[in-house]
Image 1 (cartoon, rainbow, N blue to C red):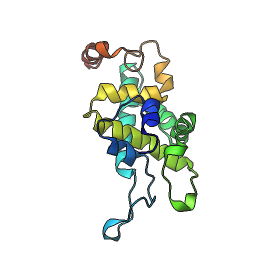
Image 2 (image 1 turned 45 degrees about the horizontal axis):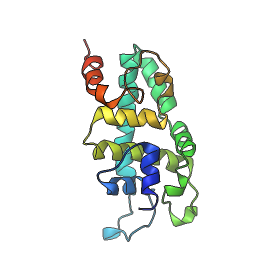
Image 3 (image 1 turned 90 degrees about the horizontal axis):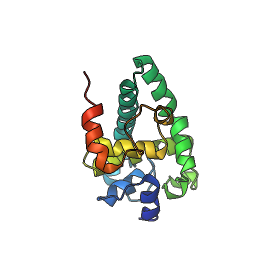
Length: 177
């Protein structure tokens, strides 16, 4: 895949299954191979659906652990996992050259396509790391999603926690009492 090493550096993940990364970077409707049974190619929609759920889980989980109300958690999700916010993440990391779009778009990445691709990348990481929440959580924050939560000095999960401490943090901070 074109630019695989660059993408892996951006998202801080060496993929065991590079086909997941490749799928995450194919926008819906991009005709990179002939459709089977005349069905429209779904591109990265499958991974984006998973990624959207994992993003929201991460933001809500962080919020609850930091003592936020359910209303505050909903506001955080609306702000930080919105299409506009995720498109900004896509632009910040200059992902557009790696996204395969439909021929009609002539390489232009729309805000929806950019946001969907960020969700799909999270979904790809989720599957590639064997659904390891601690790992995908770190990747999400490494991309810059959930900045408001990272700024809280009580945040105990994410890129600032060394990998060898991750299991202790996971065991200690995620026990709801």
